[in-house]
Image (cartoon, protein in one colour):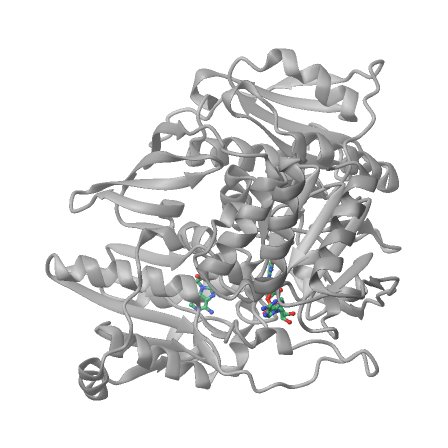
Length: 265
Length: 331
Ligand SMILES: Cc1cc2nc3c(=O)[nH]c(=O)nc-3n(C[C@H](O)[C@H](O)[C@H](O)COP(=O)(O)OP(=O)(O)OC[C@H]3O[C@@H](n4cnc5c(N)ncnc54)[C@H](O)[C@@H]3O)c2cc1C
Ligand SMILES: Nc1ncnc2c1ncn2[C@@H]1O[C@H](COP(=O)(O)O)[C@@H](O)[C@H]1O
């Protein structure tokens, strides 16, 4: 049995996330009820695990750190085919930066019986640091390959993968267990099916907090984060825009004229 | 500490393939300013093979010390060998600040180094300032505003920056400095190995240096709408840029994304098609002589950030513009 862990982050729905913005008058961040969804690239990570499962005996554990509503996202992963879901949730975990997030995920993964492979998304849509995968690998003391676009050879103790580079890729051989962060090009994630939802009803999710992870409060959440936000300021925009009036034809003529004036046409 | 000072500012440069990327020189320019403010020296760590000749350029850009690892083991990017070279050296010299370019290597190396050093790391900064307390303020756009991130206690303070955020420094040909040789780690059992690197010749006009950029966003609506934007770019011999939703939709590749977590562009002429004007995208464009937005919503924030506004449905407007340009070309 191969044990795969998929790290899934519950993120504000990217289609609505832009609604969360500072108020130009109060300069504060208003509370917004944007629904949480699976981080888009974590769908690719989960899909990779599900495809491994189609090819052999694989146990998939989804691990997610987030507030209680993130449980819904873990449930969705179960409905998509994951075997086990663990939600890391505790008020003490709040405000974690990438470092504290990776640390907490590592503590949870170390609690599992055995892990052969860990899959993450390349980036989260709301944090987008790309740090959690490599930092997680460091805390676990195992290797990492970031931006994986293809699993070339798996199954042995050393896997071969293709990872993105500017204008190309690198072929990397890595000793397992390892962490991989995956890109969108890896696969096309499946969508939810009714049968999966029914099956997932029987699977419960486990919640672990500070006590279960046996970590000190000062090593997680905001307290365990080396970086903090010190300020958030509203940026005034000066509007000097000249709106072009007229028919679409006239607007097109104007644009062509402008490009000639600037000397790019 | 036997070398350097704790006020030193470091840049991790790359010499992969014998060429130092422009972003490293830009960062050395910035490190110079930060180092002068802190009263510390600028150290550059350069790992590669056959790169000896390029060291002078680092001094010209502002480096005081170059830690040079010139060895066949550094010829390709090997994550563990690089980390095991950089981490011990950093523990020894204890720089205040370490900057890396948001290159493919930098984006993997930075978190590996930061986690090993037990310190914080800020992604894709668009500005770096030393505040009154001598702490590095790292600026990133967020929630329609500007966020400041600090790493108040842990050292070094680490950040990655994309090419084009900071200007190329003026090279001072009279500057030189000290070279300190760096030896590869001994007896390291590596578990990750880059077997080969495959590069294809990039197609079209490179986005970062294109004089005209046509950027498309969610407003393109569908793959067909996106194709019209690509056609327009082709007709104008322009580079295609994008926003994150366009990449998420699969209309275009991540390589075309402009902004905070994408590329920085400096075109003479920039056209935003179906883009709302979110800061995270707009910080990626600077120095344009003229900026135009095509958007069907006259209230779209993009209009507050461009010179000329065209309120139109891009699916109607772009084909008309294309036809007119082609007619003009035929003349
Ligand atoms: C940490 C982080 C990092 C990010 N980094 C980046 C980055 O590097 N680059 C980036 O681009 N984004 C980035 N984003 C995402 C960013 O916040 C915005 O979500 C994104 O830039 C919005 O893209 P858009 O303007 O295409 O889409 P939208 O905001 O959805 O805007 C679409 C626009 O199209 C207009 N429109 C619709 N239909 C038409 C039509 N038929 N004709 C004309 N106009 C039409 C609409 O009026 C609207 O203004 C990041 C987000 C986060 C949280
Ligand atoms: N809170 C979290 N819980 C579980 N996985 C996470 C969490 N945050 C980040 N990750 C994983 O790390 C990847 C990169 O996230 P980031 O470093 O925020 O860009 C994501 O795609 C997830 O796989």
